[in-house]
Length: 188
Image (cartoon, rainbow, N blue to C red):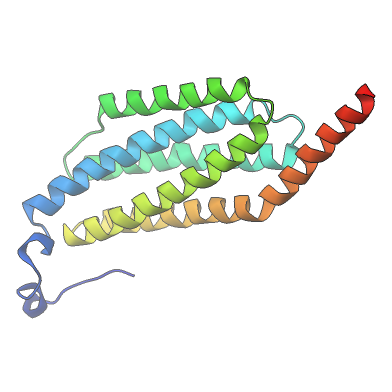
C-alpha cells in the first residue's frame, strides 16, 4: 500500500508530490487537524448514541468498543501532529463537538432514533474511511511514513466498524420494527 520512490524515481514525481515538499506537509497538517476534530465529533456522537441504546445490547456494546477505539485514534492523530511539530486545532475540535451535540439532541426527539443513528453512523464511518485514505496518500507524499502507518491502522479499524454496521444494521431494523409492531398491538 505504501508508495516509496527511489532517488531516480523521485525526480520524475510531480514537485507537489515529492516527499517532504512544503505544500504536501501543509496539507497533511491541515487534514490531520480535520481528522482529529472528526474523531472528537465521533466520540461525542457515539457516547450520546450509546447512552440511549438499552434495548439494543449488541449494538451498544459495539459502539462502546468503538468509543474506546475512537479515543485512541484521536490521541494517535494528535501524536502524528506532534511528531511533525504541529498541534491540534481547538476551533476545529470545538466545532466538531458542537455539531455532534446537535446531532445527538436532534436524535433524542425522533421516534426512530436507533435507525437514524445507524444511518448516521454508517455514513460517518465511510467519511472516516475516505479521510484516512486521503491522509495515507498525503503522508506518503510528504515523506511522513510513520504518520501513514498510523493512519493505515486507523483506516482498518474504521473499515471494521463500517463492516460491522453493514452486517448488523438489518437485524437492528428488524428488532426496531418488531418493537413498533408490538407497541401498536398493545395499544389495540
